Image 1: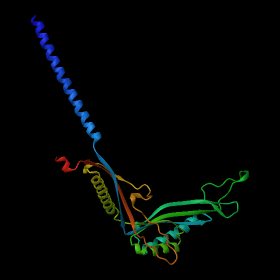
Image 2: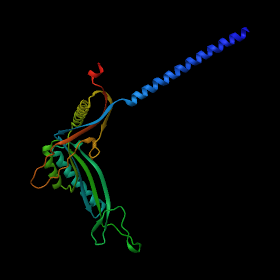
Image 3: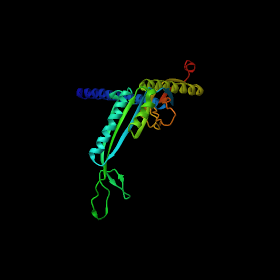
Image 4: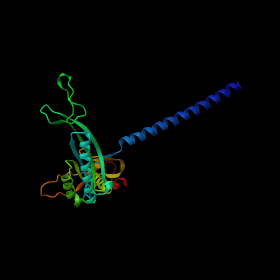
Length: 270
């Protein structure tokens, strides 16, 4: 009899503990569900802001090449070396530092005749000929591509024309740049964020709510800009009697910001 009473008390205690545990689990689930519901139903506004800053270029990057031909490998190579040396000496006399003159590419290839004769394809392998005959090269071409940085923009045109006169026969690109690009990027980014905030505040006011905070910030890149870092590099051809300047460089920034919204403070105080 006594053992049955003890067993019943033990069973009742276990049932109470189990009931408390289940209540705790349900309460935890309820709180989590409410939290998720609040997170899903929070009011936000998604806006973008952009800014564009213009800077004066303070250096010019020039990519150029010297292409020479000769009947032999030695002849083509020596002619190329002679012109490169002449251009390099001119650049140094013009104030271009040696560290700002860099060789980018070297090439030496045979030249095979075309069907019309004379200099033709500059390929590593000869074109096919009938009857399996062997086609011999009629010469060789040597190419040296290099880049220079002109730190004084005012000297650009004289340097450009001087290189052409001394044997540079191909200009692959001219870019007017600024050495303060990082500074202008930061400034443009700050202005873009301000623009996004102003837009969000104006829209929230019109909707009768207020901006309460920030949920997400994403920096966006201008995909249509073909230049790295959203910095526009301007290529300017030079020739004739006119003069060239780099104009201005456009540095752009764009951000996407998701702002949290809340009712007006006056309404919350009621």
